[in-house]
Image 1 (tube, helix red, strand yellow):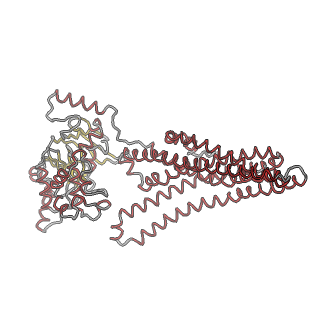
Image 2 (cartoon, helix red, strand yellow):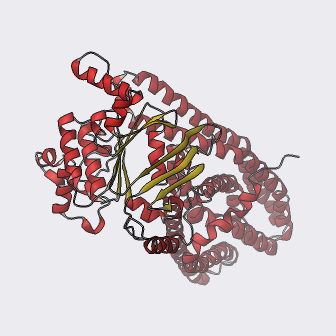
Image 3 (cartoon, helix red, strand yellow):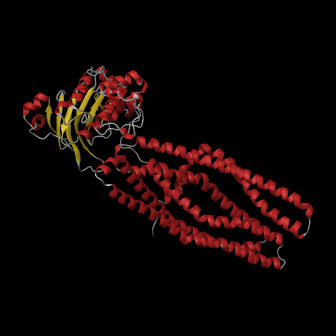
Length: 615
């Protein structure tokens, strides 16, 4: 027997969303009071109409007409006011609940590690933050009271109609078993369709986001027609998924509408027969017929509400999957206290570095470190990496593409944890440091720069915190070789850069990223091919400024130009995840190994005799 794997999740979706709703439950309670008033008024209106027919029209009691009309006006005004009130409160309830939910989603995204983002499409994440949360808001703000309205009206109307004439009410009740059968079948077939629609939308969003990011590449290769066809395929798939939902509704909705029309037919046919036979008054038939919309409306609306319920479930399951995701990079509960104790012990033992629990000195040791990505443990990226850098020293890393250079420095800031071995910072395992302390003291400036849609000064001061003032920002920009081109702009440091720094050259963006890292004042500065897009003269100036920094920093430089690392205290040459050579520039040149080959080729590049080395 087939068992729906999401059945238990569906059953728990309402329990799961409840904590986000609790702060607004008093508003819901007030809405329930207004809801009850609205429904009571709705029940009174048909009875007043029937009384007018029996007492005024049939019996000729005209003196009661004014009183009954005034009562109908008052009932209508009370009902309209109550309905408006609870609808507004329920909308506020839904908006507030989703606000708290989206905040949790956003915080969770910041807590997740690189592994999650490596395997989750951007479009899927955006769908969870937008369309999925809106489906939940729609359910809380509208579907909840519509379902309650349908149930209360249906049951209440049946009870009153039974009191008016049980025979006619029994005839209508014979239709309800068919109603429940149809709604059950509609829900069963709609559930998988909504999951397919949601996944198709995520795929479409990912494709659009990717093309927006890579619009320059698309234009450069004149691939607009190809990308348009690819988009049309995704768009067609999304359309077909929605058409499946429409076909499902087409299959069941006519029957539900037919049941609604059959109620009118039964009421007019059988009710008219009872009036003719004298078993029912005309006023009672009018009242009975006025109650009919309370039966007919829920019958017709049930299909749409079932669709909204299934959309709510599909969205909840996707968002719950995000919120229950856990980062592989977890901070120890007592990390801060443990670091304090470790630093105190080191001081007693006379450690050479001057680290504190809040400020690292920058000493780094890789103790026979190996690493493989969690989703592919059989393919090691780094193998037995072992080296030591004193605080304030400079390390250069050289190697071909795929040698593991960027992965190696990612272990220092603990974007990943080593599979084997230990990464020690100031003699303490990186896994024992509080993440906030570690990442505030280790700053990576990547070759692929990212700038926010903010002013240049705002981008540089992004991590500066209390140190963020115009003089400090400008001094960091000068060290990074960026002050010259910034001041030449019409608005200087108040110039707003476009999305991801569009409008700036690659070298300008790299220098701004370096200035942003320097403004954070880290103890360990990692430059991952940071100056690849600047000329050698500007790079030399940047290197000189870095040597003249007020505070000593451990600087790690990944580069493909030997000129960028030749002054390093230690140079590592990586190949296939292993260190094949190590030493100073003079030692490695004298060894006539792999480093010497690269050095010779780059000398040849300068004289036009050989092709330059490319990482």
